[in-house]
Image (cartoon, rainbow, N blue to C red):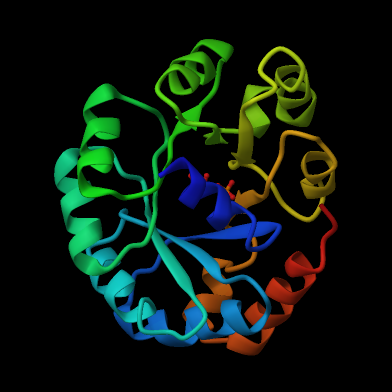
Length: 208
Ligand code: 3PG
């Protein structure tokens, strides 16, 4: 599963984090992001529509749709049933890791401390999320993980935008960054898919 999550993190420099309220937005939103060059999409399970959104987005050619905000084994079951190809979690619990392993769902578990990272390395995970990135010390903190915890590679998420994304992508232990800035709620509500495609294109062209 760790090899799979590594693959997903290597698809593009940015993984859009999506909070979608209206299932009618799912297809055009995913199409715009994929067209802009961001195939891996994280749909957070934070709206009543989220599972239907995953179902719709999973039909978009070229997209790899995952479920975010996985907290419980039931979330994992629901995500897999909806067609999620990977999972993302704000943290890590044995219960959640076991559920994802049983479902064969590649997971990006959230870490914030060296102890979190060590727990995951012990369990065979080398690809993980750093969350919430900016408030946990940002790129300078994650840089300090790279030497003592060299095997761990990250998708930092939380508080990242075009203003600071390059600070993260320049680090040797960063694979990609997660963020909601490529799909701002105002543009989604307006259905401005062209503008979102442009934001995706800008993010997809970032160097790693
Ligand atoms: C979230 O929790 O919504 C994600 O971490 C995205 O954070 P962001 O909105 O700061 O990019």
